[in-house]
Image (cartoon, rainbow, N blue to C red; front, side, top):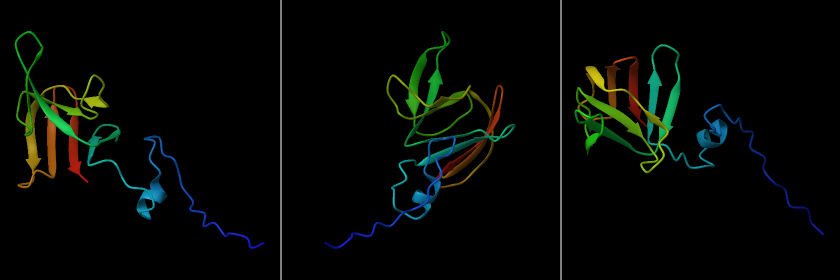
Length: 117
């Protein structure tokens, strides 16, 4: 009877529940398309999709958008009754790429950088 040799791949499960080495070696598919980093403490959130929410005077969502703008908040997926992260509304867009793969923005209480992975 022959023995089957199994390849072991070392992995580290990060605080963000990501298998870092496995993703780097392309053994597991990275399910995230976006990464948000908060400037003051380096807090990182990742998501598959994002939406920019416009608010009405009563504090309810008026309309979702695909582009950022002053007054809109970033909503990170999953985009249903639950979400992974919601920022306060944007007060200033500091920098952005033409293709939409990067934006640095300020909200009422934090500064962020958003990257398309």
